[in-house]
Length: 209
Length: 237
Image 1 (cartoon, rainbow over the protein chains, first blue to last red):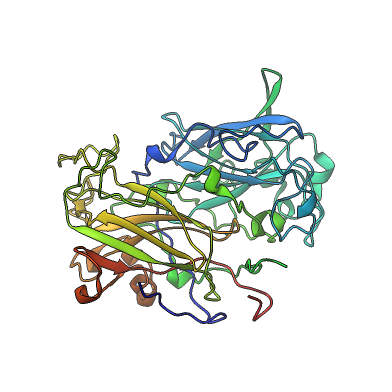
Image 2: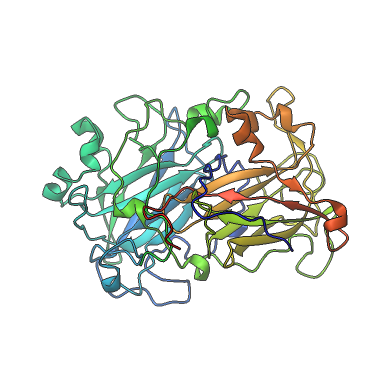
């Protein structure tokens, strides 16, 4: 079969996005897709770091649940490293930690991820506080919405995080810090609710992708 | 040293991306932030992404046209193939490519699709594959039917296939839809028309392979995907 030729460095335009629509297949989801701590469902979870649960609800304008949204999470390991060549410390990254997970929201808009508390790391843009990047896909969301979850208990690191500081007001920054939400079987839980559209006082800040 | 992975992610050209709201699609309002998106610095978290998702998102389901127990789905058999490239035209290897679509009657195998059109017991309509060394992918499926969007003033979605592609960085993610060339509904589709640039719309339409060039008894389409991402070092392979 012939393959179209293309020259390296021939500039091409990045393709246009579309929504996932209302019918993203539930059959795509397998048990453990929302677990960032294992490389694959049959693998042992990583032994490094503090296991945590990150959960919350996705809400739309008016506060109703955003049902069937898909959330994708990506974060550094407990030592603040990524198993990716663009991380200069990737050789020291946790070999048993995937760092990526996918969840979908139920009829109440609820989602849940199982992961470890990420480590912070130095970066050219400034020192990053522990954080989890979230992308939200859903019917009517023509381009994914992206935001970042931070954690309480890292006040000093959060105060100098270059992404948090990209928000112009402290009230907006506070909205990206998850709330402590008790324990489940000895695992700390953190709650992070997302309001996709609302009043300026309530709407979750989202970033240019 | 970077294994050919892109390390520069330029802003999207807005003319080539969907603009909202879209008439008859209220979720493009109630799920869209009222405030402009905030600019942030791009750091390691955004540049990197999972490189080994195939253990988690299992590929190997690239023939949607035949059921698990070997029965052919109803509809016109089609083959969709092409390559996944980055903005420098380099192949994106080991990308996860997920597709899903309606059956030949325009109905999805999904409990949320309650439209009064028949389900095909031999068609689930989703698949997943991994791109090869040249960024190539291929699926067998059936041509999906068109369907009307409820409560939208007779807006019909043209036949389309949903694609979700996970590339080598968080920023090289793409979710889009593929359209079939020559379908009269394409010109009226509100999603396709939400891209202001006609050339960008054209890039979402597949190319039909002349039937005499097709190796078997199916219709074939070629479709190229370009993920975001460029390379700081020109010429690095």
